Image (cartoon, rainbow, N blue to C red; front, side):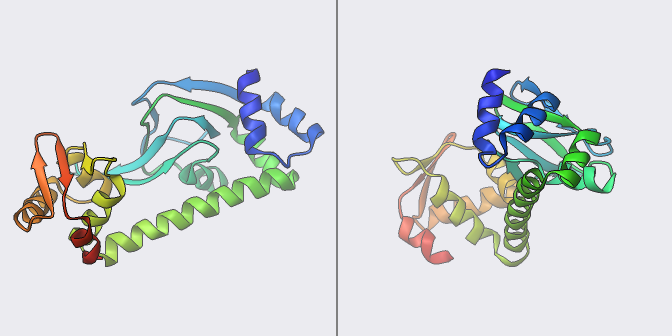
Length: 217
């Protein structure tokens, strides 16, 4: 527990000592393995959580099985949808899944709502985190609606290549990240290869003309 409280203290550096001591008595530490389910559509929201280490993703799945990642929750962050569900007393409408092992602290719904109402520092932290996640989500929505898939794919390749210029991810994973279909991504990657922008290998994509990809945007 001491480790979690030290991590939480770094997340809330401006929290008054006496108020932080009360908060420390309310939170509970949890450790979750990779690919653990945090919540599913229709689940009631009973607690808030703050990620201390690791990453979780929030995604929706269509009737045909197509997955779209809405956003991620990283160290020091809270979940946008969880905050919304707790505040409005509604159920989840997406899936929450850990991408890595995750350490977090959780706070019950009643305690969360009480702190929001009575503690300005906690309220500012939650609303600040909510605002940041919402801004990121709006950028994602704008990209989905306004940018061509080939432009978003080019940006993804440039942002996710390693030092050797390679992206070691499957076509399905890239499609999920971009909110597209695997067939569309595969077709575009083959077109990029035909133009000499990339070279496709088994399980790896090599960027050879970064400038040409950048010009698509």
